[in-house]
Amino acid sequence: MKRKLMMVERIMYVDAHTPLNCVFTAKIQGCINPDNLNAALIKIQKKHPLLRVYIDNEEEGGPYFITNDRICKIPVRIVERFTDQDWLKESQTEWYRDFNDENKPLARVVWLKSASVSELLLVLPHCICDGTTLVNLMREILSLVDNPQQELETYFSFNSVQELMPATFNANKKVIKAKIFSLIGKLFFLFKSTETQFNSGSDYVLHWKLDQEQTIAIAEACKRAGTSVHAALCVAFIKAFEQVKGNKAHEKVISPADIRRFIPEIKQDTMFAFAPIAELVIGKNTAAGFWELARKVKTDLTNKIEAMNVYEMLWMGEYMHHSVNKMVKFLKATNGTHDITLSNMGRISIPKTYQSFELETVYSPTVAFPWRNPNTLITTTFKNQMDFTLMSNNTFLNKTEASMIRDKAIEYLLANIPQLTHA
View 1 (cartoon, rainbow, N blue to C red):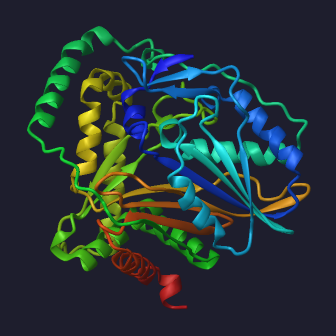
View 2: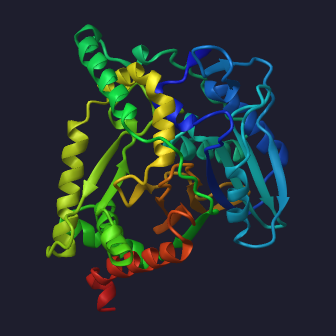
């Protein structure tokens, strides 16, 4: 493979000197056979083409994904485990370790190891993965560690955006529109300041879980109210930002969607990085109640997702490569007009029980965006427990304020759940 990074991948690549890594962690009770783990990583590397490439940033017209047939196997760094919080420390360490060696793959594993409990941390650069990718890879790893005789079917990666387009997609009719948008993009960034306002403070992550009773009660209350858990979380955090940040709050959440719902050519077990986004807004100081707002957000999100033309979005993005460097600089320089990016990955479909170990829990992925506004909330649900990671930078949103936002959002959410309020 020698494929130029798509525009959407290029943004998440940032540049050769700025790591942007995702870390996904599984906590395991029981015995992990080290030989089985290494064999499992060899098999997933053989299956997924993007685990056998490096990124060439030097050749003109790049950066490119380039296959290296002699690339090393996925490395495992073993660290002695002492506490249940060690995974957070190691996650933050992995945020800043780059993937710049052409002889090493774009993935690695940290094994936090003790006599009876382990965490496996899967680390990938964001330019080759989304949340679905992380979950699928962890599922494959655990399955192969449990049963090393399994075989995985290798697939071929696409070589251009055009290969993802359906037969009905008429690119010729889109050329003029693409060129107009390209020109608009040039003009937009021409008049926008891209002088970086550095986040000089430290990146951080807040992590917490809801118990089973709370998680189940929230899901049931959302169903009765005709809305979704995602919409309820959006309202709770928008309101929490309003309470903590006052007039500085934007009343807006950015919500990523799984691209696989739009493009069947990208399978559930195919590695991919791009997630189209919808902006969800609640008017300032609205008098509407919690559930009314949650229904409005759900309707708004549904309408925006249905209106997305992701094929066109991907294809037209390839006309914007000349603006990518300015886009990245702009993201590093602007406060944005949203409060937070909220990614609800939903129920994690990884088996709980294996022959020699049990998957006790998974922790929501962590990531430290290098943007001026890095506010990111990721939530997952496993064994009927909702898990949260909230990431930001102390310069943009100090940790004390972030903790207040977390507490107020959860308090507001739980206060509107009848089963919990009257317990």
